[in-house]
View 1 (cartoon, helix red, strand yellow):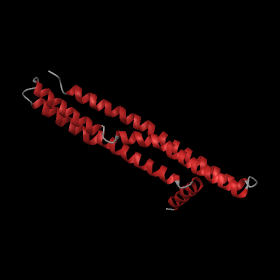
View 2: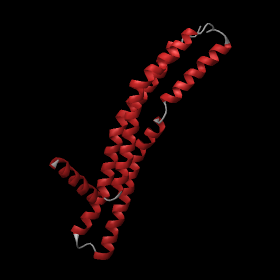
View 3: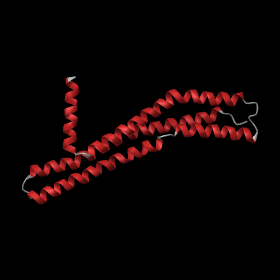
Length: 174
């Protein structure tokens, strides 16, 4: 329990040093990871049963060669693709937004530096250092958040494409 309290205090100290924009970065990061975990869950637990159901329905059909049968096949593939690609655009958008949110923190931190310089002059480096840390920490946090999502979202995207290709291959075109 003491470890958690110390961890929370270090996070609060980090946020106090970096400014309130870090809350926005943390929210975007949390949302991105919740969506990525949900997509991994869907691909590993829910989608295989759905794919088997689609393949079984296709194999159970008497007619697999007519125009009508091919439209049914295309509809099933389209519905599965829609479910596979659900939230992927949002995940990619959140990955791209994290550095931009960090840059927002840079701008607000630099505004603080300029305000300090206007009020106190350039003679007090300690006051300017607080603003500079508020300018650099959010940028770093946004970049780290984006990097944590880039790798996993790219792998997730590849898994989605592979799952779609396997579904198309498992529904033979007679």
